[in-house]
Length: 393
Image (cartoon, rainbow, N blue to C red; front, side, top):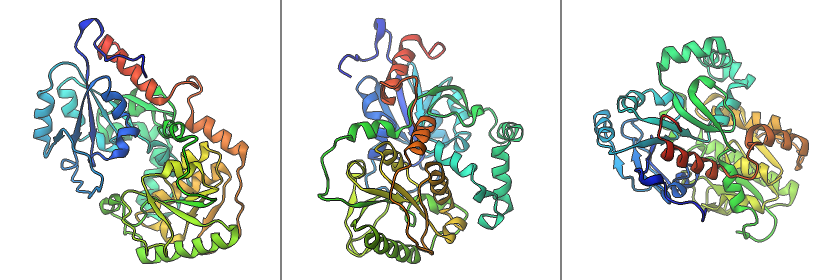
């Protein structure tokens, strides 16, 4: 990065980059949205729209935002007050974009999307589990059919979302082309993190199996779903039974790489180590990584770690249905074990290298830029945007 200079080409004013989230900002956003890197080159502001989206999540590592906007009127006023050229960058998913899109376009601004959930959504939508009405009812089945059939989905999205779309979508795959005016192919968001932690020092000595936690019973997202929540006590009991089984089968002690929104205590998993904020380094040195679905699995796949995916029937029929199905589909693509916690039986701890390579080539890496990080591709785009202006970037 040493050769990059702040974007003031020819004395022209730099573009201000405004990052939006609907949940508030946490430390992980600094990396996953490239905020720290962008801040070194451009004027940056963080705008928290959680009140507008009625999200009141308790985030233990919430970052201070430049603006915490309480209403659409405040959002409109903040956009009107922007001086000079600006670009909106967000991780707000497409189905939520329509609420703020008219205000952005009212002020002739463009919006770029960087998020890591597109693959997760796609894996859910291709799963036959979502076509079983027992796992969510007929309405869920109809929604999945709409997503699968282009000739229905495209006019449906226009009807429901109007003109809302991203001006620029940074992603490895463009699963739904109507979501964006311009698709910019990049590596999957977690690829840069994997590179940064490759060869990282050990967090723990000795071999271990790593549970990639996704806060299945405590994540704030589940407060906003119409489905019932998972029975937390039963979930923890089944998880501890599986940990006992895995340790007996493999001889590997289980370590929990806790999600920042998990809220576990030492007693939750019968005294097993619970480690926060060091998941990439823990993955680098684990012997086996397992869980339901979390984007940290991408790190494990890139590191050629054996993986496994956990579920049981209740998880397919409650608010946690989507992380469960996403993990099961990822397991199928990787030809990795998909483990029913209610019917434990021996499973292999190994890597199917051909399946891993296919997955990485299809869903993780941008073959046209093998030597560039996604951060570098994004910064190059912003430099061009600042130099040429929004209409020509």
